[in-house]
Image 1: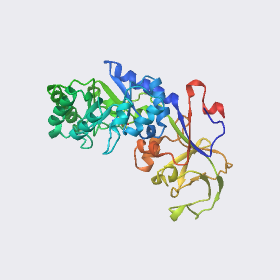
Image 2: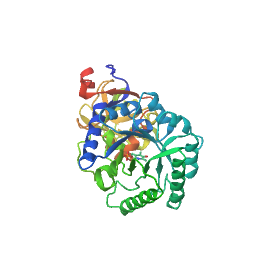
Image 3: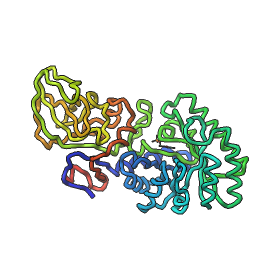
Image 4: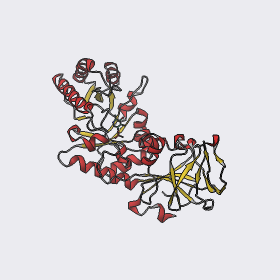
Length: 385
Ligand SMILES: *Cc1c(COP(=O)(O)O)cnc(C)c1O
């Protein structure tokens, strides 16, 4: 499974970290009640590899998997996953029949979608209500008609409504008044659904931040994405849970060379050395999904110290300050990782680049190779080298 030959630039994902995080989250939500855990593996598992992340999550006790698109769900089925699986972002022309045939539960936002799904049924359907995110889901004014249609289709044997759910706008800000409002609106939607005769197996509202910060929002099931990958859904707010970042991005230095005071670095010379130093070239750039806004702001880890990026991020490469040292070509450069050795984390890159950790890991890819290791089973990159 592992490749002992270090690549020029690669993503290394530790599946043991994913399992560890799943177990922590599962323990957290089952302390007081038998809440189920859905692990969200959309967008290629937030850049970690959808199929591998899904397998690790199931191994560690994930009850459900969640994805955005039907195509993602079908890819999981093609890879052999057979467990409870929900998709939630359909677009006109999507193949509901294929989803239903594969045992995927699909989400309906509207009467039209319910009818399209019912036409290829009998289908297991979840209904999404908009409680205040103002994104997907049925607007409050449409709840009554939607539930009535669902109930009719259920009686006709075309669908079974297995879930009713919604999604938070501000769960990373626990004191934001929208959280209470959304939870209250969700309870109203559930009451209305019950009065229409619906009796779903699961109701759910919480993402990672709400899972950790708002137990009242757990209902029957929580949907965790970012926390499963070991990143903090609400930096500065989340208590320490011992989550472990699963992704490391590393490269091999292409060259190092001296730089004289007054020399400008990279396109536009946005950084000019004010003293003699040395620089190194790292062979990865925005073509690999490394954020261009990390130019002049983020740092990497070389030979046990932080080395700042100098100048603009390029498509294929960037330049780092080596502070006068000249490590040989081939020296390991860690862009980010779990932080154990002092290397930057995805969160550090997010702060440097003006974004969130979600974007840092999800965008990474391009020409980077990706390798899965399992540090719990002796399949540790340090040992295989
Ligand atoms: C992406 C997503 C999640 C997971 O959110 P995290 O903040 O990563 O835990 C949960 N529910 C829905 C509907 C999503 O789109």
